Amino acid sequence: MKKVVLCLWLCGCPKAATDAPPPASLVAEAKKALAERERRLTSFKLVVDSTEGESRAHHEIAFRSPNKSRGHMTVPQDFELAFDGTTLVRLFAAEKKYEVVPLEMPVTERAFALASQFRPFVPEGYRAPLLPTSGVEAKKVTRADGSEAVELTVKPGTGVTVRYLLRLPAGDFLEKRTTAEGQERVLSVEKEQCDAKLALCVPTKLVERMGAEVLGTTEVSSVALNAELPQDFFSPKLPEGWSSK
Image (cartoon, rainbow, N blue to C red; front, top):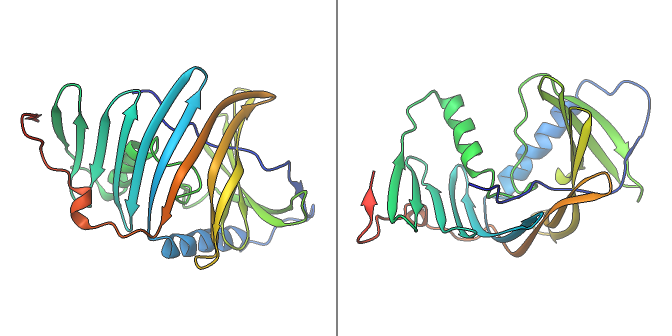
């Protein structure tokens, strides 16, 4: 299945606020900010359009804390994925196939598998980045507009470095830089929607670039934060006339 969401991008080049080693608590401070953000943002429902070269995609995604998700892609194909906290199902409209996906694995592996399944549907900035329990580096930076941010660096694989830039104290996503094989892809926020009551902002337009080349764009045309989403919404039934597996 083609990548639906293209991962996301820009907000100016940050500069280090100081050359001194960062305090040991900065990583913990950033993780705490992200956890608090997750606590406030208990649900969302989005309509998303994305481009990658000549490819176009359209989908909707809904999430309800702690782990219920439902994504429905209609372009370039009709495909649906839903998890109600217990059961993961896939629906393929062209084949009229309803598939229950086994999740018999350790809790940690299960969480990673679910995150991987839904990652193409969820634009960066709506869920906290998956950070390892150790090996995360952090430094404070001052952005071009004078605001303060934190840069988190992780190395998920040999020769791969990922840097997340987050606004403090809300933990809003601003930028993601991925370096691999000597090339850097930058996903950054160009437009956002802020909610004063929730004290956070979410992206509505993200652009990914490699140098001056635009690799892809993700635009969120409809954003409902903390929407009322009933439990049965995440448990799509077997449509009449479809086969199950």
